[in-house]
Amino acid sequence: MAGRTPVVLHGVSLNIGSASPLDFAYLGKVKELARRVEARWVTDHLCWTGVAGRNTHDLLPCR
Image (tube, rainbow, N blue to C red; front, top):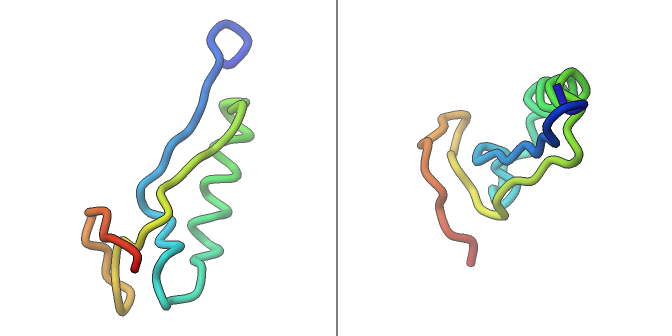
């Protein structure tokens, strides 16, 4: 895919600003997708998106 058009992935669910640990299963899926589409890079927001294992599907601010 990236041979014709450069691909950049941007996510909203890394939840890196949360007190919860990183979701390594999610990271593995992102890594596999990036490899499959030959993404030039992968970005995400520095925020939190959920609590207690529940995703709000919204970008919540870090303080």
